[in-house]
Image (tube, rainbow, N blue to C red; front, side, top):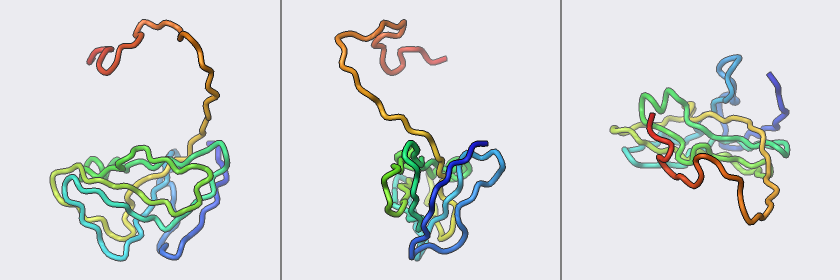
Length: 149
């Protein structure tokens, strides 16, 4: 498994454990809510959940915020802008936009593992304006054009 050095800063509102990978093969590390009081999300509601952390990511990488699968499956809790992007030049606190897509209210407590973050490589496009693009079988077929099965 390849590793990349990422600097992490604990902010004033941070308490508890630093993020950690939950298994040897995990691609994401869990982050915990840093809350002064529990946040109740009714169905359809969203909230910004602070992590109390900021990161220094090497150029050429990003951090992606993703839902935790168990939280999503059991409670309908997901990260609204999945995957949320934390750019290499951002130095502020990472906050998670969490939404309740379930049918019941869900309480998010302080120190709850509410999302996972993944370090991912980034490529920036070098744009080339052209008159035509290469042909494909799909062509300009949009949503659903390749069928359901």
